[in-house]
Image 1 (tube, rainbow, N blue to C red):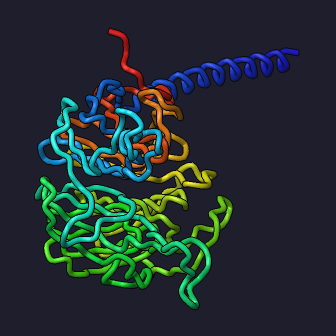
Image 2: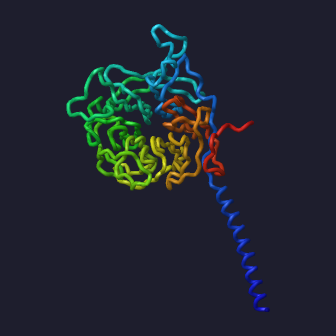
Image 3: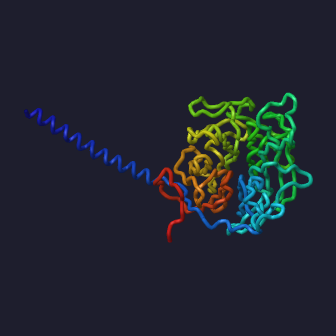
Length: 412
């Protein structure tokens, strides 16, 4: 009897100790979770200020911030519906509205400070603008992903494949901030595929390395590669596909989440951003992944984001935090309508913000992302989103939710 009592008492004591330990561990885990820090943002619903001249913007498919913290965007006037631009009818159907010039720049207060763009002498303006980058010298670069137009009644050339027209925008353009043309790389309708070193094919976004003066192009909508040029002369340097492989234009078919990782990029290859420590982060949008390379194309690592995202894919554009180490990375996901806040070195998602919708702080196809010197974030939206938004950096804060939803300003 005494033995049974002792055993029972020991068993009860063990349960008490285990219970206490469980509570302690749970509290410790809770404390540790609450001490994970991440940048916090609030949307500024009053930025930018209304445009002059009854101007409106269409699909807004690029954003960049220059050394003066001016925010540059590019949009597609051709995406506007007839009823959005009644004043352009002949005769005018109403007082409002008219398309804004393709390239617009705003100051920190949201005032419009620059506007230009469109066809001109000496260069081929894209059929469908895509991406804008202001380099460290202040030059403005743009790409395009237009397929061109087939003349009415025209048939495809003999032997040409049936289906969608090939990408006609096979070039990138370089301008001054006032819109003076400087250089064109590639020519409309000339691409010979992903190993053509003279032409692009639907280039999505560009990055210029100030250390080497090299231009990295996410190329893109028709090709399956990253390609590098001399940013001053336009001379070809090197190119590569997924995992550093030689790019291949074989049609991979639709993305399937449970298939083995694709050994080539799918279209579009949507961004290529170089970090301060010399790593190139590439958006393989339809494959839901970021691949990381050395500048010579050596594959380093990858991460898959929201693996079950089909259609437009989850990895649209990225920007790094403004600390010298670029500790954080912000990823725009235009299918799931959110911005992920990530640790750049581990590619771990800390939290996210945003939701689908048309109110400030919500998204409809958030397409591009950039940051200014203060750490504020700017986003643009394509399709019927048609806007640029500002998210004000509010410092570091404990992560309490994986998905924050709409980051509306707190009541004062």
